[in-house]
Amino acid sequence: MALAGRKPKPTVLRVLEGNREHRQIKEPVKVPPIAPKMPLSFKGRKATLWKYYIEKTSKVPGWLTEDNAGLLAAYVVACVTHDRLDKYIEDKGGEHKYLEWCQKNNYARFHIMERDKAAKDINSFGAALGFQPTSRGRIEPADKKEEGEEDLD
Image (tube, rainbow, N blue to C red; front, side, top):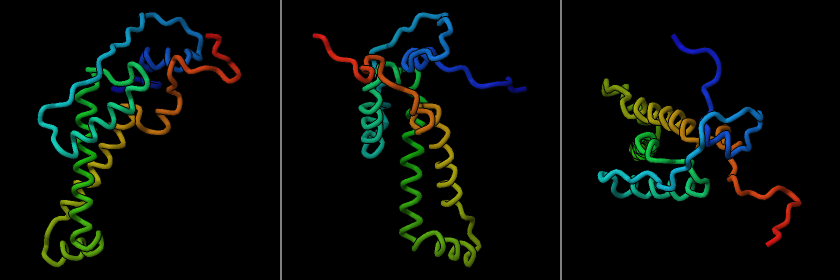
């Protein structure tokens, strides 16, 4: 049976967005400075995407940690799979011609089904990692200056 209500927000995110609820933070926040390490099997497009997301998220300390390595790896694999299958379908003449070919040859629409599954995985992994606009909108660096605030150094 599922628990009722929203999923609890990670403490790091509560601190980064400024603890808007003004509730006491029970556990101390320790932001690990180490980004997740890329899996050894990642080459080519997977390695490029991994480095891209590590670079983008490193601007906010503690966004991705070693705990997120598996989730980020699954996200990158889903992205590469989606791109590969989409290219395959386009090479066959587009989705419409591919479906006609499948029907004519009594062949399952395997590539379209797998591409759609990869798209769903991208959506769910992206939301969990904070890559979606709705999940990313509230994340701000802790050292961001308020409007009108001047640097006195």
